[in-house]
Image (cartoon, rainbow, N blue to C red; front, side):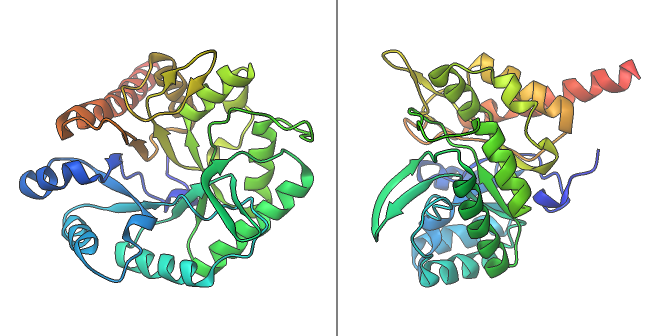
Length: 285
């Protein structure tokens, strides 16, 4: 199955996040990882060690950029200097697309530094899609929006989360960064069927998939990125790749980060699932 335009027409394979505790191991041992994802904001600087590390990684590995501060659902105008810095970084990394979250996080110039869920309304669809289109035009790159984990719902919402995500992606003509762990976390927190979610979004727009661990709290799940992927999330991943085929996949581990090999081995499970799914499919046919 060919890759689609939302992931640059290429299946890069399985990646992990580029994190400080692993820098020395990566640069010294050059492990056999397919690609790395960076948090764009960590490298939108004028120089210094972050860019030295990035350039060294780019000599050997593809890098895909993921952001945390575009706040596509906010009403505040974009910071042009931020977008210019982001564009310079995309030229440096040659990322095939950029991604950020389907959320809001600023109002009246104040920034929360949180990925806040949106009300699922037509007004929010129109505002969010317009802002995504603006960023795609500014960067001259495809944008993929990530579904966030959520812990509250708005009484003003007029549609489900998956209907909202679908409407935004179609109106903006953008890609989706499908975080299957976030789907599972939100499904438990808000009592919906995660498979109904996955079966009712335009999966052909999936540029990339995120996998991560979550934690049980008092009556809800929290997206913590600090442990192994749960089996329920792996099952959702099997379901998705069974529909859309091999797709750029990232293993996130952002807190209590273990040795590189532990993270890498967890990421390899995704490759094993893809191999198993399509070996079975070819045998059945």
